[in-house]
Image (cartoon, rainbow, N blue to C red):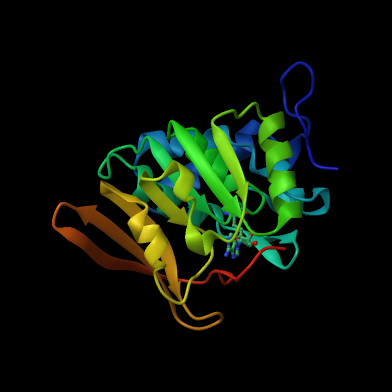
Length: 229
Ligand code: SAH
């Protein structure tokens, strides 16, 4: 069973899952280059171990570990979550009000975003993962997230446009539907590239005059797949 909030509101679990361990992870992220205090505070708030299977929980606060979450998927490393969140929500970007996330997975990145944006819409193609993420976020009393079981290639048109769009699986190309759902003045952060091949983290900004894009990092993500499961 995953860790849950007890009635007193304190997290169960000691040692590797304690607040102090989490604070140490935040300091490690700071020393690796994350500077935005609001982003670090959001990461410091979210208990990462409750998103992870009990057998792996003691590794929950290692900054560079992607851990399995079932269904062949992985939770992104704290380091990549910090980098992507700072690119999307850091002070330079201007905190986005409405964010779309593609690839909910276990919901960890979703929870971090929920502390920085007013509303988060998150799309996941695997129903079982989405249900698990919904339960975990409910236990954490996160209430500003809307879940959608769908193929994220098509975004979530109902609530568009978004100030920020973040994708946590690698697409072979930037989906046109996602660009169309980005507000003018908005920013999209996503990995692009082939499964198992070269992938780059890209930042795409939309202005009055169109889209501009830059590559910020080489990365490795699971692929964005077609259809739902
Ligand atoms: N941020 C998540 C990352 C999970 S891995 C976490 O930290 O847990 C990437 C996720 O993207 C997986 O859950 C996978 O099922 C999902 N995914 C892959 N292709 C997708 C698609 N077309 N639409 C929506 N989600 C997709």
